[in-house]
Amino acid sequence: MISQPPLTPAATLRLLFKRHYLPHCIEDPTSRNIEGYERALDLWEELTDNPAINEISCETLSEFKADLMAYRFRSRPLSANTVHKHLSHIQWILDQAGPPGRRGKEKSALGYLDRVPYTKLPKRRETYQDEIPAEEVIQLFHTAGMEATFPKLDGILPGHLWQALFGVMLCTSLRIGQCAAIPMSAVRWNRMQILLPHEICRKSKKDEPKPIHPYAMQLLMRIRGQRDLLFPIFQERSKKSFYDELHRLQDLAGVSHFGFHAIRAITLTSLSEINAEAAQFAAGHSSMRTTRIYQKVRLLESAQGKLTIFDALENGREESEVC
Image 1 (cartoon, rainbow, N blue to C red):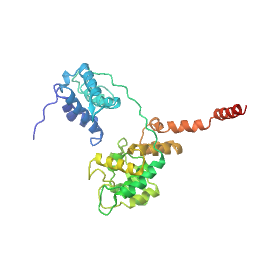
Image 2 (cartoon, rainbow, N blue to C red; image 1 turned 180 degrees about the vertical axis):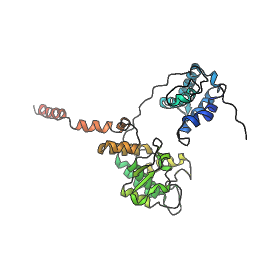
Image 3 (cartoon, rainbow, N blue to C red; image 1 turned 135 degrees about the vertical axis):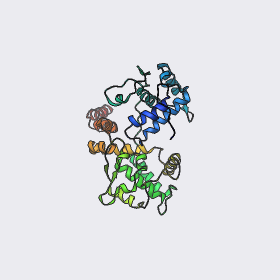
C-alpha cells in the first residue's frame, strides 16, 4: 500500500482539498460541483507559485484575484461572476485550515492557521437573458426532428432523440446535465412520470417524481430501448459537439442561438404564471425567492397591462389631435 504524504500546514491547497475537504465537506462526492473546485485549483496552480497553506497571505489571495480578472479564456476575459466563483472555491478550501467552530463546515476545520487569509470577492452581477419566444422553440423542435444527424443509436432516429429531450425539458425544467444522467430504469412508463434519482436532483436527498406530459411521453416511447441512459447525448461525442449541433439546427430553423437553460427558463416562467409552488418544485429551488426571478418580467408586464393611466393618456392625445 502506497503511503500518502502527511497533511500538515506545509501541504498545498490541492492536497488539503483531496485529503480533507472532499471527504468531510462535500456531502455528495459525485456531485458536478467537484469540477468547479478542480478548475479553481488548476487556475490557482497556474497563476500562483502554489504556496503551502501556512505561506498563503491576504496579499496572495488579492494577487490571485487580480490575475483572474486579467486572465483570458478562449480570447475572452473571465466575467466577474466567474472570478467570484473560482475565488470562492479557493477561499472555502482555505477556510478548513483555520480555527474550528461550532457551525456547518467550521466544525471540520483543522486549526492549522490562527487566522484565515481573506480578500474581498468581486461583486456578482445578476445576468438577464431575454425570454425566448415559444415560436422559436416550436420551430427548433420540428427542424430537429427532420435535420438532426447525431447522436446515433441503433433503431432510433437522431431527430426523435432531440424531440424527446426537448419534450422532457419543457415539462420538467430539468437541466441538460440532469437529463443526460437519467437512467432508462427511472422512467415509469405506466405512471407517466420519471422518478429522478436523488443523485441527479443535486439539492434533494430523496428521489423526486417528475410528471411527464402525455405528448412528451409519446416522444419518449419512440426512443425506448435496452440501454443504461435515457439520453446518451454526451457519449458519442464531446459536449462541444453536441452544442455545435444545437446551433446548427437553430441556424436551419432560422431562430436565434440559445442554450438549454433558456428552455428551462421558459418552463419555469410559464409554470410560475399558473402555480408558483409547482414552478418551485419543478425548479428544485429551496426558496421561492429564487423561483421568483423567472416571474419578474412577466409579472411587471401583466401589472402594466392593468394600468388605466395609459388609456387616459391615449384618450387625451386623440382629443388634442381633434382640437
